[in-house]
Image (cartoon, rainbow, N blue to C red):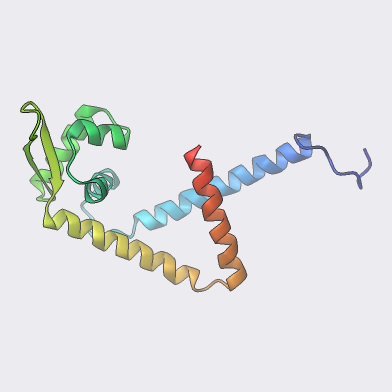
Amino acid sequence: MTSSTPEPPGAPADEARVDRLAADLRVAVLRTARRLRSQKSVEDLTDGQLSVLADLHVHGPRTPGELAEAEHVRPPSMTRTVAALAAAGYVERTGHPDDGRQVLVFPTAAGRAAVEETRARRSAWLRERLTRLDDDERATLESAARLLRAVVEE
């Protein structure tokens, strides 16, 4: 093929470009996530604990087993996380209304406040950086956000 002839999809040049894009996106997404995670309202909360609180804030009371499944961890790990959150006053446990062998975990006012303040801080951090971009750059990121959601939801 001559240099003016485009390579067919799946050609080595196309694969190399996709590989570079994958590497660039991986680094950008991980660095962005790391910076966002640092914007939390309670420094003593681990990322895992904050994730559990956020899950409870959105979905309401859940059993430790449901939380473990949602967070993709083993039940014993979730039991430790819930115990730490309860000891710190961020969650409470109560009996399950339908199954006496189960408990339900729900956020306390302090747990809800930690989630809401963290979300506000993270949104403010990102919003401040987005205001530095022009309209075309923000439109590109809107498209990228939509595409990334599609990639993750596959």
